[in-house]
Length: 54
Length: 476
Image (cartoon, rainbow over all chains, first blue to last red; front, top):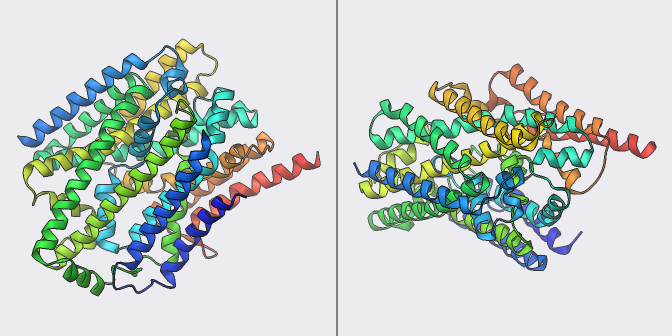
């Protein structure tokens, strides 16, 4: 499997796990930003992949 | 008067765009349902996004964030990242094979891959049973928003009628061309209205209590971490079915066929991803800010159990021009979802149930199927069948048996047609059985079977039949 696919899958797994471990009782916006920035990273990886579709 | 004026402008502009789109149209089914695979990337991106994001976003998701906190953000963003990953991995091969094999509907795709007409008919029936309540829910949403916009419940029926007519007319004027172009216009409008809604609330909170105090109010309620609502089981039950949305909903699968070239396909995926991120961040942040504003006494407090009233309550506090814009954008979100489903289902019904007919007659059957579906959905919405809201919750779970079968087709793995048909029937029957046994769709949605969400049980059962079929085919 491509390395970029594995990174995307790893990020998705972390988006499930970290909220119940590291960020469970968050009192600030860290969990909000963790999910938002994880999504940005997946979109950027996807963006780079789509550049190879030409 | 202002909401009526804006609504009329919306109808006129949308209809002008739909009529204009006829200039792109060519005769034949392939053009009517998939634009002969020549839709531009930007329009494809906007129609994909507008079709996916329904009225749920600015009503349901705002309310869910308000009531349950930041966990709603994770639920919706996990749907988005999973969809982006699925599109990145599969979209190019699906797009290419659709051209090679002449696929027009997702049921064509499965019939062709498994070499069985029967599988297309089974898929068509699953789509029709699962998606009619979901379409009816969109019409119900239009009726309710229209009623609130006009200031009286008595206008509900008129709202449903307007919604039904818009969905039908904008679908049939030029098929996918009128749907995609009106979706593009409405998608941009949804994003603009969502942005204005966010800034109105952000300024209200910032100028009156400040962001630091708002954060403290949310933190004190435990809404910035995983609140008691979002247990791991509930989180998985919500996210797992939605993560496969791009694989199982015909209206979005069909959109993988339409871009005119690889560049257009790439633009569709990028555009959808950016739209999805912006729209999700706007909806969730609005919900969280609304809760802080309610806790701080800035806006009326809405009980979390009545979370769908958050947006309607906030709209009553805004300038009429702004609230009218948001009202109309929510109607647009419902229309874009409903018309794409109706067009997709009409194509599936015409091609699977009328496969013995010549193309010209199948086209007419497609028009009739669209009119019939809209009439059924509107009637159900008009009658306010309470069960419909519950049933629509289960739509994605009911469509889940399609996931293993579709993913195998996308991976170009062949199993005997009988195992694919059994896989679909077994998964679908399990959902129907659970629904009849428990009586409440929401209970089935959140059910735990040996510690696993019901969606996982459905996926496992469907996959089991495919595995048996695969083993048989290897042996023979």
